[in-house]
Amino acid sequence: MHNFALTGVAGYIAPRHLQAIRDTGNRLVAAVDPHDSVGILDQYFPKAAFFTEFERFDRHLEKLRRGPAGDRVSYVTVCSPNHLHDAHARLALRVGADAICEKPLVLNPSNLEALRVLEDEYGRRVWNVLQLRVHPALLALREKILADGGRRHEVRLTYLTSRGTWYRYSWKGDVEKSGGVVTNIGIHFFDLLIWLFGPVRHSEVHVSEPDRIGGFLELERADVPWFLSVDAADLPEHVRGLQPTYRSITVDGEEIEFSGGFRDLHTRVYEETLAGRGFGLEDARPSIELVHGIRMARVVAPSGPVHPSLRR
Image (cartoon, rainbow, N blue to C red):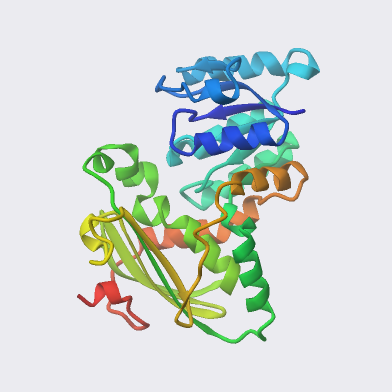
């Protein structure tokens, strides 16, 4: 049994990590969040120490590190806002633990090298949660793509998830903290596309606004017009008013169906990570470099396929 600590326990994604820690037979001994709405702990680890001040959490982990071996933390799960991931991963390494970090691992690619140096210095690892890579339907699709002789595919990515006024006033609406729409909601899918269709050869940005962004990717084995938005007005008419989210990835005109099978993906990632087969810094690098480049890019006239949502 391993001891875990967790940052950002009041956040949206934390319950999936709490379940994964429990389902893999481990225990949470400490958690931190500036917000104290953390009754979710009662369902999983009611005896875990809880802190609203990061400094006290840090001090507690250091105390455990210097105490009996059975009390030391082996893993720190990072579910905090995006701009804090790097710092919280470094805390994990400093107290002798591995970090298991939600996406994006970092906002700027240069920080990956700093984490690699610290991994070597402390002899611990930083792992990323890339749960779509363990989805059974997507694993089967990847095997099919890799077996088809390397032919090119026509792919289209659409991810629209409406957010209310609160979004702009939270850390998620602050590009310096979240990385903007392309990072906050897009990095999952860009990692998936690179994993499925190979490295990026060319990238264009056709529209870039606070609530919506779109462009074109030329990957090794696919051309991908893409569009992301948190504006409800961008939802297709046939779902508007009925559902807040529309997600579509098509390959050669055929929809990829992977809406099911999400319930235990974090647990599966934990199983792989605890076995030493998790996703490390170099696994995370391609998508981090891509979204950073998109964030920094200027809008250009299309030279490749244009996403239908941008033709309006």
